[in-house]
Amino acid sequence: MSQKGHASNQKLILASASPRRLELLNQVGITPDQIVPADIDETPVKGEKPMALAGRLARMKAEKISESFGNDFVLASDTIVACGRRILGKAATTQEAEKFLTLLSGRRHSVYTGVLLISPNGVSHKTIKTVVKFKHLDKSEIDSYLSHDEWKGKAGAYAIQGIAAQFIISINGSYSNVVGLPLNETVNMLKGQGYLR
Image (cartoon, rainbow, N blue to C red):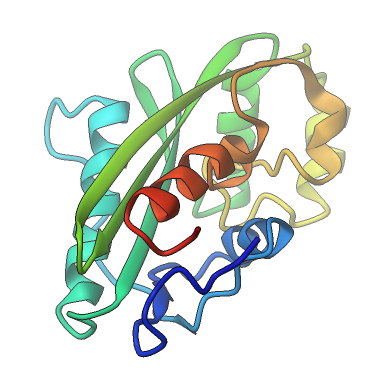
């Protein structure tokens, strides 16, 4: 895949600290010129639905970083895990991670990723939903998972691409969306805005 569908002085800036998003982009042959994480307040607004939150946070990240890279392509993303309307953020403690996993046990939950691209040619944005079903987890399985520290820094306290893969009964939608960046939609945005041919 060619990245040279744009002027050589225009860079692709990834507004994310997530190593998983970088790995996903690399997987499809895209290497950002710079990684510039956006430090924003990720607290939901009262009554805000999970899908709206994912889209708003992606927009805030992109807009913040775009202020310093006005002539470049700025790609931002944010992933939210929700069980019903309850938003499960990044667990702060082992106890909170245990609560999240107990809640997800034996149930379907939704993973939303908002993606926003600001480019010299305009703005593209999408929010993608994937439904994931967990098997029933007993306490020993949860305790064993928590002992690996994989839950740290992950929305919903799990990483589908890691040990937690064994908990997944079914996925309805984009797998890469659950990892942190829906690749099909992201590549289409980059093509639509002229970054990729």
